[in-house]
Length: 513
Image 1: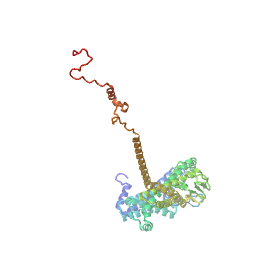
Image 2: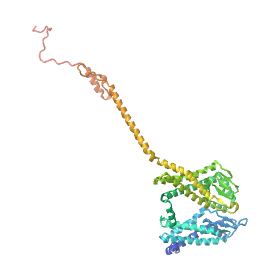
Image 3: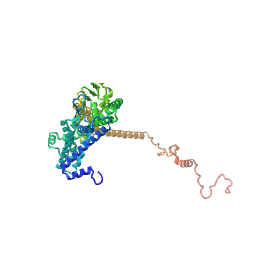
Image 4: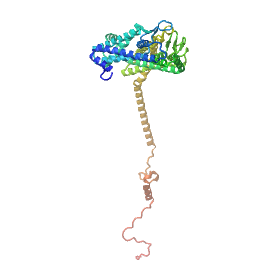
C-alpha cells in the first residue's frame, strides 16, 4: 500500500509491539506459514498458467500447492490419481524445499523474541509453534480435498518438528545464542559420564564429526557431478523424454534443483560402500549394481551406473570416505595437541567422533530417501543404518591410525628434539677439541723445524747483510734500491789532517835535502 496506507511489515511490527510475547510469537508463526503457502501457490499457479494443456482448474492447482507445502516439511502424501487406481504414497522430500519454511519460522520467532527475556522468550517460542501449526492444520485440511492427500500422522509430526526446531533457533539467536546450563534430563545424563568426556572430548569430537560430515556431503556432490558428466548423453535424453512442453521441462528442472541435496547424500552413501536402493531389488554401489536397470526417466537417475560388477573408476570413490576420516583425525589431533592429550585420549576422541558422524549420516540418509509409489517404487535412497555404520567404520579404520601417526609426528620434537640437540652439542664440542689439538701439534712441529742461529767468531751472531733474507714488496721499491746503492758504494777517504804534510824521503825537491 502507498500514500497514507501502511505496508505489511510495518503493520506486523506494530502488532508485535502491542501484543505480549506469546501472542507476538503466534502472530509471527502464522505469518510465516502463510508466506510459505503463498510462495508455493505462486510457483504452482505460474506453472499451471504456462502449461499448454492444463488438465484441471485453478482449484486443483491450489490443492497441489498446499500439498507441495506439506511435502516441503517432510510429510508423506498419498496420490489417488494413479493408473491402477490404488493409492500410492510419496515420501521422498526434496531437501532444498525444506529451507524455505525453516527460514521463515526462524525469522518470525527471532523477530518476535528480540525484546523479550527469560521465561517470556519461552512463551514466544510456544506461540510461534502454535501459530504455525494452526495454519498448517488448515492447509492440510484443504489439501485433503485434492488428489494429493496428506498422511495425517506424518503431516502432524513433521510440521511440529520443523516448527519447534526452527522457532527454537530463532529465539536462541534473538537472545544472543547463550550457553546456559543444560536441561535437567541432559544434565543428569552428563553427570553419569566422565567429566573429561563432557568438557573436553565431546566438544572436540563434535567439531571433528561435523568437519568429516561436511567432507562426506561435498564428496557425494562431487560423485554426483562426475556421474552426470560421464552420462551426459543419457541425462539430456531423459530430460527431453519427460515432456515436450517448455513449461513441463522447466518444472522438471526445478524439481532436479530441489533434489540436488538428496542426490549429494546419495552420492555420499554410494562412496561409503552400502550404495543406494533404487526400488525393490535394485541396488547401486561401487562394488557393483544388482537388480534390474529399469528406472524412471528422470535426469538425476540417468547418472546411475549400469548393472554389473564394479570397476577401478567406481572403486576410486573410496577416496571420499578416506578423506573424511583423515579430516576427522586432523581435527581431533589439533584439539588434543592444544589440550595436551595423551594417545589414549586422542584415540577415545576419534571413536566418539566416529559415532557422532555415523549417527548424523544415518539421519541424513533416512531424510534423503523415501517412497515414490508401491511395488518397485516403494523404496528409494540409501539405507540409514547401513550408511551410518559404514561412515563410523571408515572413520575408525582410517582415522584412528592417521590420528595416532599425526600425534606422534607432531610430538616427535618434544621427545627426540632434546636428545638430538644434546648429541649435536657433544659432537660439536668434540670436534672443537680435536681442532685445537691439531693446531697445537702443528705449532709444535713448526717450532721444531725452525733453524737455530749460527754464532760468529766473536761469539755473536752473523749480522752480515743477506739480500735474500730481506722481504721486498712493491711498496718499498725505492727504499730497496737506495739501500743497495749505499751498500755497494766504496768507503769514503778520510780528510787530511790540518797543518804541514810530513816529509817524504823520496822527494828530492825538498830544500832541506
